Image (tube, one colour):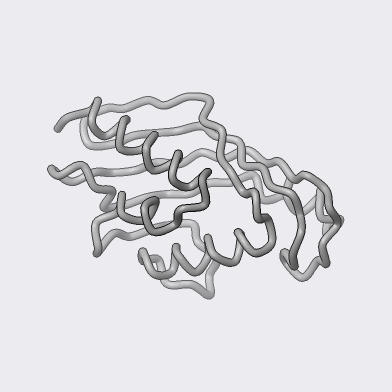
Length: 136
């Protein structure tokens, strides 16, 4: 397992994500990847992840991730991030506020031998996000 390649692939994927290039971002996943942590109404698939990210992009057009730390061991990578975005569309039933929203997250990825993500766990500070939206 090439740990450095997996780290570089992740950083390249985040660069694509931050540029709003969802197709290039999603190309970092194997076609049959399982994505844990998506909203319950979405399938834990690349397609479900695309649907989630597209809806987040509608609500937060400048949605981006800042990476604070990455640790790689074998086929698994852990990343600590902060997501930010300006609230310009409906999000969790809340009309646009124009506020810049920020919340922290931890993500874990497991890679195949080709360096594609085959499994991902998304753990976000959703309580912080809901507070900023005035829902809690």
